[in-house]
Length: 103
Image (cartoon, helix red, strand yellow):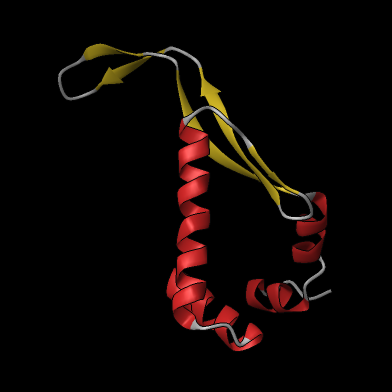
């Protein structure tokens, strides 16, 4: 599913103009990126959390040159789904059909 698909579904479900929905979705993504780049985590109750995870400093190896490279500690964006979200996916019949694991 793409961003355009999400926008179309919201438009169909709510009856709101497609340009308004597009602006809202773009604004949401922009706010997530801006706030996370400023070091803030975002918590959406019942959905999940957008958090910055810290990666430790480590030594990696360039195999082709046989040299060691130091990768400094850095942050990466991460999404942690809420328990309600996880349970909805676990109990979904459609997901079970797609994975071939019917109970």
